[in-house]
Length: 302
Image (spheres, rainbow, N blue to C red):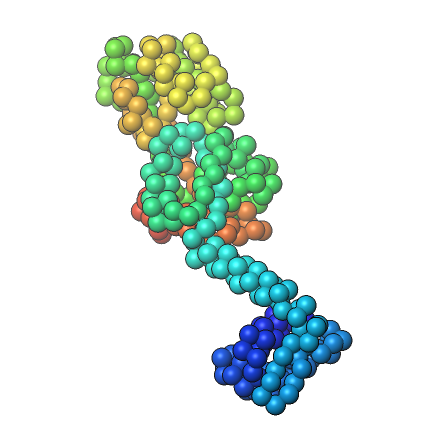
């Protein structure tokens, strides 16, 4: 039983005339009659009493008509639902992002995306890059903003670099500057109290690695906070913190940049190589690239 046959049957039943039904359906009458006969053979019963100028439904036809109309209505509904998703009227995007980007880049990007596609539901999973990569590889995210490189143990992902972001030192405006110079060196952090993120934060790993490369272990006055908590601890004068420039610019704290380009991080958008993201997620990726002016960014396999 085919949808086309049911549509032909329902049209003839409504018009009670094969010729007029063929005209409405834009098919030749012999073809229409052949499809109806094929449907009757498949069902094992005649659907119409055929008399010149008088087409009526048989008992079998009367039983089939409401079912056929319901099936056709459901098919039309399914077609509209799929078209709405395809045309980005409805759908869902699952985005993962580190807390530092959720506090800076992500809100502006999602505002632009929501204005274009208000019917798309946006789900944001906030976490460290390592956790997000595992979630992405498990198929629980469509896209993830991650800090690269990830290391040899990372699953196979396709990544597009979005930006190289400067890391800076933030301190309380009510405290003395951390150094008298305009820029600070990693070595200057040796004797300064620091507020440190919880384990699993990429910023924690970057900062500790930089200090160890400079020959010392950093000293923490408070350890284990999320981004908002760390900024609050700094604002309270408990110590300095190393944070991304985009976060620092919105924090209201004193910002001291590092010397050179050693303290930087690379932000990329990633998806699974073996499972291309759905169209709604691809559009979000495009909005990200547009927002950052990174349309020419290169895509790299990891």
